[in-house]
Every structure is written in structure tokens, then in C-alpha cells.
Image 1 (cartoon, helix red, strand yellow):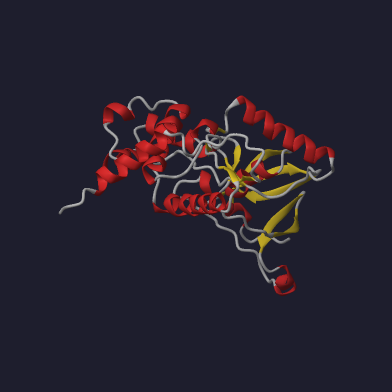
Image 2: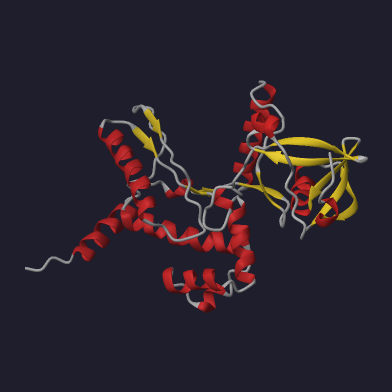
Length: 283
């Protein structure tokens, strides 16, 4: 006798759904147990990592029910964040790598891809795909409680959290280095970058050498070795820039100028200097 496992799966999923087995209502006779888990980010179909994460949570929920708890297990979807925004731009630009992933890996027809022209549409598409996968996995989720992080109620809840933490003195405002996207003008983390690359944030010590009416600025990772310096290396084939900064004039490379523009607000370029003109000078 051949067993059709798909038919058995469909049979029981249908029974669970029709009986509202996983819906949780108030029950004063049972102890309450609420559990949640990191919301999936809907910018791709679910993968084996999702299966592990949500299966562990489902096992926990079922175990607590067996112990007599009235378990509430909701699910949400994380719509906020820059990766979906970046994905929308890449699709609009017909990025070949992303189009290949959508068509060849995710099996999304081009007719559907053309409709994904807004961040919310992309999120909703993968939201539905991930949700269907969770249903097929048989997770004991109360889908009446489903929400996204851009729902008005949830946004207000997050606002309340931050205001509460701030009023209690648990949040302070200060300065710290962050990864930065000069194109979009906002901080970025690992998940905001192409290929999930962690932004490289380095710390250098700036050494200022007196040079005419300005300071020739060098950066080093080993400031303790400065006492042995015999010369400063200059690239004769590039341009340097004289900038006004903190009531001083600094001579820096053009690449450094680009970084200073995003690090320090009050600076201005006053003069372009060829590297060759600095060769042979004394500081």
C-alpha cells in the first residue's frame, strides 16, 4: 500500500484550520503563556534558517499547551528597513544579478516582477510566500493576530516604547561612528549592504605637520612610532586639497576630503594642490 503523505498533510491542515485549533481566546481557567519570535524580513522567500527558527518556536508553543497553558503564538512581518528600499531601486534599474535571483532562484515570473515597483509590494509578495510556507509547515500560529511593522498600531507601540525609555533616562543621544551610504545619505548596517557586508569602520590617529600657512595632515594606525618618522610620503600623481576646518587649514588627499565631508559638518575646500608641488618641501 502506497501512502500519499501530501494527502495526509492536507487533510490535517484543513482540519486544524476549520476547527480554529490554533486560535487563542481568553480562558480564565488556564495560566497564560505568550511567546513571540523575530519577525521574518520579507525581501526573499523563506529558507532553511526560517524553518529552524520557527519550528523551534512552534515546538515550544505546543509543549506549553501540553502542560496546560493557554498559549498565544502570533506572527508578524518586518516591513521596515532599508534593504527592501534598495531592492526596489535595483529592480527599477534592471539590476541583472537581482533579476537573475528573482527569476532563476525564486522562480518569480517576469510578469510579476514588473509589478513589484514599490517597497510595500515587494514586502507583501514575500510576506504571502513566507506565510504560506508557515501554514504548510503546520505551525500553530493564531493568524488572527497577524500584523506588520508598518501597521499604525505597531508604529505607535514602538513610539511609546522609545518615549518611555527616554523618560526613564535609558536612552541618551551622542556621537558614535556608523556605516554611511553617501548615495542615500543615511546610516547602514550589515543587512543594508549588497551581499550583507559589514561596514568597515577604522580608527586612525591624525598627525598634523606645520606646512606654510596650513597643516599637512597624515593618518596613522601606529601613533607611537611617530618619533621615528624621517619623511612624509606624497603621491606626486594625485591632487590634494586645502580645507578649512576648526579654524585651521589642512592639506589632505581628495579621498580624505570625501570622508571629511561625511564626518565633519563644518568644513570647506579652499584650494586644489598638485601632489608634485609638495615634493621636496620641509615641515
